[in-house]
Image (tube, rainbow, N blue to C red; front, side, top):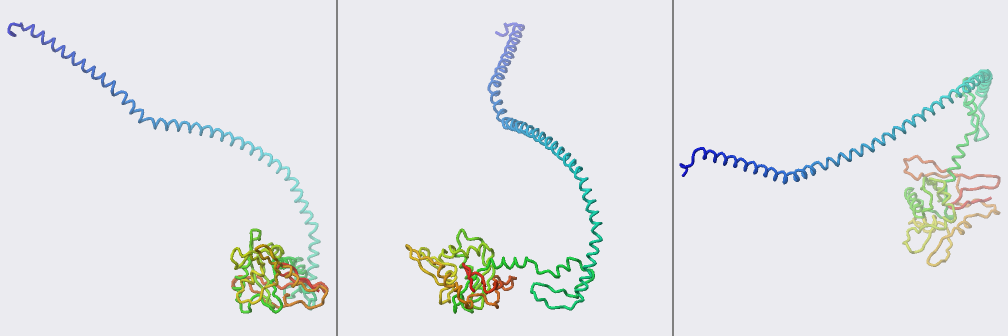
Length: 375
C-alpha cells in the first residue's frame, strides 16, 4: 500500500510527525522544569536560612554590643573632658596660691637668716664658755657621787670640742623612759606566793615544767572576755614563790580582778562535776608532787556547784597594819634569780623584785589578784 502513496505525501507525514515529536519533547521539558522548581525551591530556601541564621544572629548581637560600646565610649569621653577641665582649673588655683605664698616664705627665710646672723656671736660666746667649763670639770679630781642617779664625767672622754648637748647629757639624771619601762614591767607582773613553809612547786621541778603548768592553768581559766596574751617570763624566788610576767597589762589586770579570781573553768575535772577553781587552785591541781593546796579557799554551797572565793585568801595574806612585824616569807627577797619563760638561749628581760619605800610604809608587788601593804 505504501507504494500507492506518493512520495511527497510520505515526506509531509514524516515532517509533521517530527514536528509533533519536538513539540511533545518541549512540553515535557517545561513540565519537568516547573515540577523541579516547585519542589526544590522551598527546600533550598529552608537549607539556606538554617545555614545563615547563626551568622545573622551573631551579626545582630555584635551590632548591639558595638552600639552600647559606642554609647559608653561617648560617656567616658565626656567624663574625661570634664575631669580634665576641673583639674586644669585646680592646677591654676594651686599655681596662684603658690605664687601668693612664695613672697611670705621668702620674707620668712630672710628673717630667719637675719636672726641667725644676730644669734651667731652669742652662740659662739656660749660655746666658748661651755668649752672652758668642760675643761675645768675634766681637770677637777674625780669624786664619788652621793646620788645613784647622777653620772660622773670621765676626764678621758672630755675634749675641748664638746658641745652643749654632750656636756648637759653627762650631768643630767637618767631619762624618765627607764622609770616608765620599769613601771610598765611591774604592771604586767603578778605574784604567786605560797603559804609560809610551803612551796608552789618542788625545789627540783624543771623550769620548763613550771612554765608548761602555768600556761596550762592560764589556758584552762580563759573565757571569751579574757584579754589576749600569754606568759612572757617567770621569776623564781628563794621563798618558793613565783613572779609571772604576762605579755599585756590588760591580761594582768584581768587576773587581778576578784570576779575573775573567783570564777574559772574547771581544770582536770570532768564536765558536769560543778567544780570551779581559781588560778592558784588551777596551778595547784597541775602540781603532781605537791602535798598542800596553793592557797586557802572557802566553800559556798549552791545547787550542784561548789565555788571558790578569794576573800579568805586576801585575809590570810594581808598582815596586820597596826602590828610592827617583819614581812612574811612570801614577800620579795632582796636576792633572787630570773628564769625566762622561753628557752634558755632566748634573750628575756629579768623581772626585778621591786618595792617602794616611803618612811615606815612599804608597798610590795601585788599578789595574784590583790595588793599587799604593810608597815
